[in-house]
Image 1 (cartoon, rainbow, N blue to C red):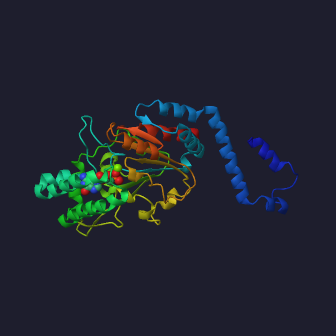
Image 2 (image 1 turned 180 degrees about the horizontal axis):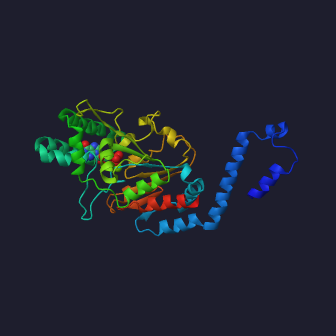
Image 3 (image 1 turned 90 degrees about the vertical axis):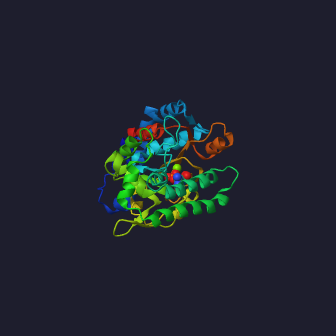
Length: 351
Ligand SMILES: Nc1nc2c(ncn2[C@@H]2O[C@H](COP(=O)(O)O)[C@@H](O)[C@H]2O)c(=O)[nH]1
Ligand SMILES: [Mg+2]
């Protein structure tokens, strides 16, 4: 559609814009909608000129770590997201082993937010530390067991989270101690994570970190790494509540474990919900099968592009196949945010 033509239509009758028939015909909302349609049409024209999406698809499919079962669907989602631009985009990301690394360069497992207690308490109070480690050794295999259904796993997850949270509350750890634990922890950002988070903030794209981990730990980690929590970053997570002496005294409700990361635990009145209203296009980043419904509950009618980090064994073809079925893009043992950054860069480049 040519903007000039549509302007001619609006002005080719010799009546004043204020005359009743004209004003009745073109209510303000219709004029706004027409302007939005023109802007989108211009963007589609621009998009065709730049071949942004075909070039992006070529780049994506050229990446060694990527597996993409249906490039046509991915390209269609990307086209809508690029046309929609940064203003219609929201990123919903898991934290543990998604924004953080699963293993270091030597293949050693790194820490989850809960794991901050496993590591540090063992050093300070070995007897209590062993309880945290025993819990992980007992329940982590259940979380990823391919033979159990999600329904069979849920009671075990509730027991794991509930028991480890009780250990934290009963020990009355102080906020200061926990901040020190984070400083000494083995949580490591994925390569490029700081730049990714800050580039979202720079382009006013909201980042919702939806974690079944401990939100306070993520906040302290971001503060320590970035100097402050960026304005665009929001949390849906288990939060430690502190008493007047800043001692841990409870955890937020409802409990968020791996298999209930969906609208059932989203507080609709969350203060940031107004900020993501209208953000119809979602980039979802996760590493677990429990992450694939994090976008449910965000009222919108645009596409969700699901990017999944596969940290499992390449010999486990059944697990890998399952990831390929539920994620649009699967990143195999990828320690970076390169793919997500590239997609956001293209979205930002068109408008
Ligand atoms: N070491 C421990 N890990 C735990 C514990 N409880 C949960 N978890 C792990 O956290 C992630 C969930 O976080 P997310 O940000 O990825 O949603 C989950 O995968 C569990 O393995 C614990 O007590 N200790
Ligand atoms: Mg995770």
